[in-house]
Structures are given as C-alpha cells and as structure tokens.
Amino acid sequence: MTAADVRDWEPGDGRISTPRAARATACSADAPARPAPVRADREHRTPDWSEVVEHFREGLVVCDAGGVVRHVSPVAQRLLPEVAPGELLAAAGIAGLAGDAEFSHHGRRLRARRVPLSGARCCWYVEDVTDSVTRSDALLAERARSAFLAVVGEKLGNPLHPDRAAAAVVRLAVPTLAEVAVLVLTPRSGRARWWRAARSDDDAPVVDSGVVPASDLPAAIAEGLDGGEPHTVDWLVEQAVEAGWLSGSTPAEVSARVVPLPGRDAPAGALLVARRVERGYDGADVDLVRAFAARAGAALTTALLYRDQAEVADTLQASLVPVEPAEATGVQWGTAYRPAQAGLRIGGDFYGAHRLADGGSVFFLGDVSGKGVEAAVFTGQLRQCLQALHRVEWQPGRLLKLLNDALLETSQAQGQGRFATMVLGVVRAQREGGLTLTMAGGGHLPPLVLRNSGEVEPVPLSGMLVGVVPDPRIGEVTVRLEPGETCLLYSDGVTEARGGRRGDEQFGTERLVHALSGCQRMPAPALAERVEQVTCDWLAHGDHDDIAVLALRATGPGERATRHLHAVPDTATPAEVRGIRP
Image (tube, rainbow, N blue to C red; front, side):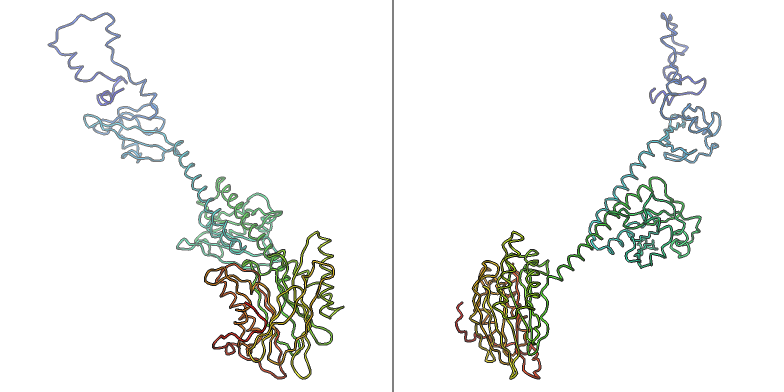
C-alpha cells in the first residue's frame, strides 16, 4: 500500500479505488471502446487494501476535512474504542490525538502520529508502546539502581572509622531510598549507637546521632538486629510523623521498612527507612534496600573490625613502648625516642629504669637485632627479664650476665638467634651531692659525660654482645657526676644517621659531641630532645634507624631546674674532646 493509495482513499465499502487520474482516463466518454481481454475482470479489479490494513501493527484512523471519522482499522478500534466512523474525532475526547504525542489511555501507553492527506484530510497512526516503554523504563531504573549502588560502594569503601561509616550510610540512603533513614548498631556494653538522616528543604540530608540503652530499643529495631527479611515497621512511621521529619503527613501516608545489616557472625546493625506512600516500597525498591544494606553491612563490619584491630594494636604497642624512668633521688631523667618506621610507635631500641630497695636505680639503654614489630617484641622480653632479674641481682656486670643466659635459653627454645647491645648501670646519690654511676657494657656505644665546664668526656666502656656466647666479656666502669653534670646514653641510630649534603654521610660521634658542647646548663629532658632534633635535622626526612636517648643529670639539694630555652649555647663551638676520633 503506497502513500498515494492512502491519500486517494475514498471511504465506502472498505475498498481502495484506483487513482483519480487513472479512473478519469478509464471512464472518459471520448475513449473508444476496447474489447475486453480475456479474464479482464481479474486483471483490472481494484485492489482491496482493507485486509492489509487490518494487519498493520499501528491502528489507522482516517478523518475527512471536517474532522469526521471515515475509517477506523481493527487495531485502532481496540486501542481507541471511543472513536467511531461517522462521528467527529474531537467528540471522542482523547487529548492525545491533538498532535504527535505519547499518552496513557485505558492503562496502556499509546503513541499517536498525524499524517496530512490530500483535500485537507488526515489520518492518525496509533501504536501501543506499553511493552517497549515498560522495558525501557525498567532498563533505565536498573541503570539508576546500578549507578546508585556503585556510588554507595565507592563512598562506603573509604571510611574505616565506624562513626564515619555509619553517618555515610544514612546520608547515602536519603533521598534515593527514603526521606528518613535511621541506623542502629548492634549494642555494645548495654548501649546502642544510632544515626539518623532526614531530608531538609534544600534536599541535603541532616544527620544527627546519639546513644540509647539497649533495654530501651523498640521491638521493631530489636527484631531488625536479630536478622530476617525486610518488613514494615510502625514505630518509625509514628516517630517520623511526631517529630515532623515528614511534615504534613499522617501515619497512613507514610510507608517504612526495617532491614538488618549483614555482619560477620551476627547483624552489624539495623537500617530503618521511611517515605511517603505515593512512592511506597514495591518489590524492586525492597530489593534495592536489601542490596544497599548488604553493602552498608560490609562497610560497617570492615570499619568495626579495623577499630578492634587498631585497639589491640594500640594496646600492644603501648606495652612495648619504652617506659619513662621512675623518679630517683638526686637524678633528673631525660629521654627521646623515634622508631625507624613512621607508622609504628615501637622499634628495636629500648631504655628504662627500676628503683632499688636501697634508694638507687638500675638504668639501661640498648638496641636489639632487627627492626619493626619483631624487634619491639624482643625488646619487651628484655625489659621483662630485667624487671625480674634486678630484684635478685643489682651488680651491673653480674646482672648483665644473667640477662645473657636468659636470652641464650630463649633463643634455643625458639630456634632464633637474637642478640642485643646494651649499657646497664646503677646510679646512687651521694650525701655530699652528686651521683655515682656504675655501668656495665654489652657491645654498645660508650656513654658521654657533659661536665660543668662544657667539656664532653667519653666513658671508657666496652664489652661483648648480649645473647651470643655463654660467658661474654663484660666491661664495667664507675663514673662520678657532680651536681649539674650529665651522662648521656644513646643508640647507633644517632651516630649512624645518614644525611648531609650528599645524603650518605654519617652523623658520627664528633658531630654529636659538637652538639653537646656548651649545653652544661641544659636540663636532662631538653638535652635529650636536642640530640634527637639535631639528628633529625641531619637526616632531612630521610630513612633512619631507631633512635633512643637516655640522659641522667645530677641535681644538687634545692636546685631549681633551668629553663632550657635559655640554656642552649649562643655559639656551638666544639668542646675539647679527649680520646674521640671522627
């Protein structure tokens, strides 16, 4: 059926006549009569297009110049039962036939297309697009849900703090899933944390939080924390209406659901969502809420697990961090500590002090083999051994040998060869003032003594590594400190720090002595801090070994601590160093 055939269609018995030009030629009175050929009635019969029109996918409505319907195809009769031949099309009252448009009619989605014909006539093609529109809408909705869940996965993959993760969950739920969202975490220690997000006038959700006793949780939330499928909840509807979260709504106009958030062994919490009934929650919405809850539960479970592991790590690190020395008569302590790994507070260097029954103190500073967590665990074992052994032996040389035997037994039992370097000493205050230090060396760097004159003296102390051989050679020396003088113990992280202009030059003992020169008025804490600072300045943020510093300053009776900011020398000139080579 051609366009010309449709334009020249004259309604009548349903047949489509020949074109007027051809009909005029055939009926001309001046034309001579021609003998009819054989079977002329069959060859020149006017085609009947009505059967073809009936099988069009589109319905066809033909109107004359006055808007009167002249023909309605069967498909059009089914889609537009109000349209009847011989009546005005406008009388049918179908607004969608005012032009090319897509409209709803009797629960179906129709698309109309107007085509002008000759003689001011027109025809309408009407197609039922309900299925295609439904499929298109379903595809768009699925794409929107997938995009929303992708954003949820991205946003919830970042927070590793439970509070931030919970706030992100309720914030993401509004307004896509709900106008009001409430998240309640599984109670801990009889208390439950909750977060709520409500839609505001500018569409940005407002989030608040709080804590409630577990015994005061509504039954609906308790059921959600027990797991199960999403179900309706009247409690949130009442709260949303009473609190004005959904202004202008009554309980009958609000729909709410509660869904558990999956956890490891039990639900991590419960999510409650509510919105007005005109949107409601159909099967697809409930599936989306369930998928959102699964991602939220995974994020919260990860954040809670990270928090628990962080608490364990902090507790363990706190037990392995060097403990500040206890106060002792006539002694001012100063310490500095910087582990090699910036992300850890622990390392392989250690120091400490324990009080003795006679008023003295056992002090020590050392370095173990290895770095990081394993080295820190080993330092913890050493400190525990010293804490127990100093109660039965307080002579430094013999105490260090007892520690050596303990380390050898531990290494044999664990099948690991671990050793350490250490300076261990006993400090006692003298009646006439000052301190007496008796120190034993186990393969560690010799201490330095800062005299009242500003002179820096090395302590002639040597010895073998601790934990290597059964009967090591242990050096021992006694040093006297006058009031105001300081003994400095330090690890090789100070002298072996690499930096300078080329970045590979060691800090060395000579530079350390130069940094101490003229600092005799500086309190022990400030002196230890100065050693750490000049070492870090030399490193210039480069990699380094563990750094540990322990300073002991002899204080006189009634001596007032000097403000260390005024104790730094104006010019750092090298002091006279005896027996020290660069």
